[in-house]
Image (cartoon, rainbow, N blue to C red; front, side, top):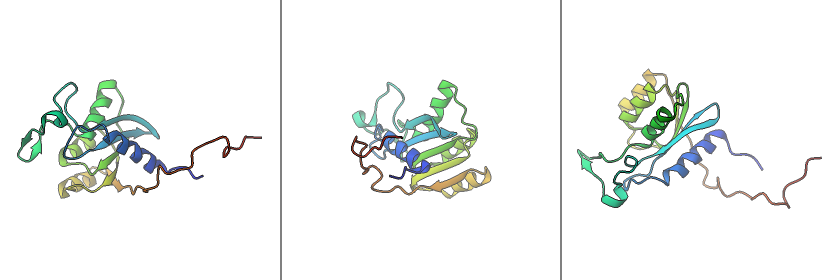
Length: 160
C-alpha cells in the first residue's frame, strides 16, 4: 500500500478541520505546517464564546459576514497565541484565500499556500502573492483518499 503524499495529507487535515466551521455560507479549514509538522489549524467561525452563524444567522454588511473570522486568520492567530513562528511555514487551506487573508499570510512570513478549491480568486491577491514570492499551488484531492484497506493482523507482515 502506497502512503498518501504530504500535500494531500495536510490538505485532508484542512478538509477535516473545516467540518468544525460554524459558517453557513462556506466551510473552510486551514492548517499551518513547518518542517512537515502541523503547528496550527483553524476554521471559519465566530470569536471563541461568541454567537455563531449556525445559531443566530449571518451578520451581513456589504455582502460579507462580519461575524466570521476566516480559517487562515484563526490558524495564524493560534500561532500568535501559543508562540509558534509562522516564518517560512506552509499553509494548506480548503479554498483560495481572500485579499485580507492573503495580506495576513504574507505578513506572517508564510512562503507557500496550497489550496483545494478555487473560490473567488481575486487578481489582486494573486498579484500580492507573486510580489511577495509566495508560491500558490492547487492540490487535487483523490476521491478515494480515505477508501483504504484497514490494517489488520491478516495484512500486516511481521518484521524478520
